Length: 119
Length: 108
Image (cartoon, rainbow over all chains, first blue to last red; front, side):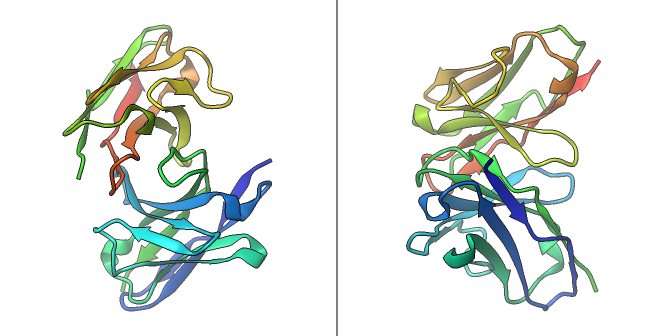
């Protein structure tokens, strides 16, 4: 069974750093792209960018470029989404999703990681 | 960016009725790059339809997708109680990929 299991809820202060994770199982991790999607409270879905675990290629949506970083540890089939300096406006649910090709639909999703940034 | 506009914002239906959800793009979307997702409260989205009209694995045949160019439709032939949710269209052909704002299907 394919699963994407994300790390747990986070509560942080503005200016702090954060890394959340997405662990894939039940498939060959490096053979699927990972996209990250933000959902702010009560709002819709926003694509943040995509990441190829096989070669660490990243593409960021202009709305998120420079504010987040994608990475991976292939040895443990895990993708990461990282912030170096959080803002209150980063408060949201974050989902990872896998897709077989660079430009294809999201076949499976993680359960989401809620992030709260508040002073 | 390609803007996807979904209508209506909310659709109030009784079980057994037909649901027709619209997704209109600000420019042409290559067909194979148009998908639909369902999201229930407290859950992650789930892929329903990809490539405009192909059902994802395990999706019942009461869900169907159609359309072309910049005008796409998701139809639920007879709404079941478990279908009350928010539905999003997505284009993944032109970066940045974008989602519509969603259509809520609620119990009338």
